[in-house]
Length: 116
Image (cartoon, rainbow, N blue to C red):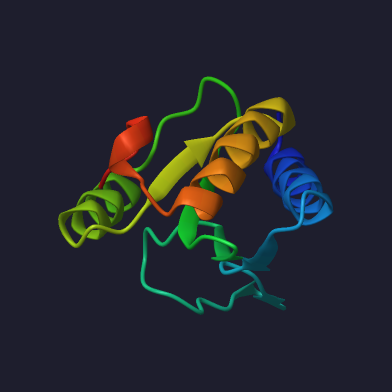
């Protein structure tokens, strides 16, 4: 897959989550001639789920690993109790979305095994 394919996967995941009722913001976006605009610190995940729960989503092509910067960012977020996940497919996003919708009704992350 090319970089644009990961961008397309991210857009498809965002669309699927929004269809399920999530408020989703793209974080790492923007390009200028000759370079990129960095809107967040290196390693910041691609998407922020704002509601009905709050979590960060890193989108990766299947089989690709997180960079060192991404691993570090994810570890730091988890130390602060922030939910951060890596998704590699729309179907995975939909399955996780179903869990998150259930959680948003109970507000009990630990009860279903997703505690920070």
